[in-house]
Image 1 (tube, rainbow, N blue to C red):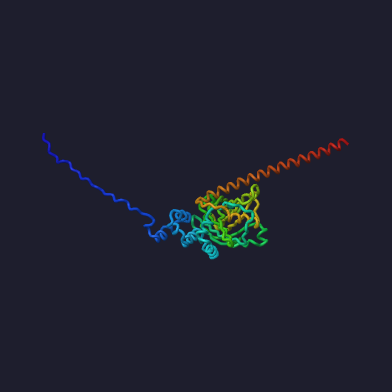
Image 2: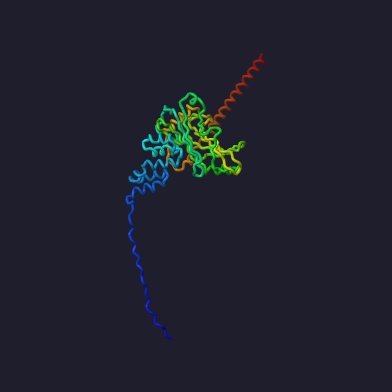
Length: 347
């Protein structure tokens, strides 16, 4: 047996040379590229966060046109001449307006005062979005110094009774519409004091409840902000700034109209405040604490449920107190009747 001689095994080793990574920083990127192609893609909260990372980004993020575009895209109503004029008078323009109008308002200021300067005029800038697309935008000015306003129940309507606004909201005629609107509908109601250049957002961003009226078939979407503005133990210790959007009309399977958008202020006894009482609540809210949170709808719904719970507890205590008083009155009446009967019998 013979074996053929094999050539010795040979192998070639490939050597790969890795180049050291090139260190990059913001300083290597031209400021015009950052401002035109990066920062313009951010929303307001992201832009605030970016401004806190470096001195350079803070300078670039302070550009007025950048914040003007953010305000106009977030709230189309801010593009109206009256709102633009108010924003132009603020120290940092649209950036100041965004920082005041975007966060959820909680109520009492850090250093509560009993006497507030009531505004003589209120401006409401309202924007409604459906699936992140604007469907309603309007600005309404309300004179707030007349005797009629101060003594009458407070209410601001964004639409006249006969006016409607066409929307792409489908009318399925079932509870599915209500369920979908909880996630698809969003609202912003910015209340502005034009004299003192103060503003706050009274909306929970997303609905806290959506219900269909049993008789008319209209859909009522409620947005709310709960403000802590009164004395402890009083009915106005917590008040609800309730916004109701009424949608209706259109055949089943068609599209609904916005028929009403209104704002009222309700205390824990279920009483709607008058103009003077509401101005006191708003004045405290303008000076109140505000939280820059990206989950406004969660916090808004939580505070609304807390308000309903405290409202039920207050009603139960009131009924219990009234029941005890009724028992005392009945007992007193029985004692008087028995005493009178005993007196007549002893005679």
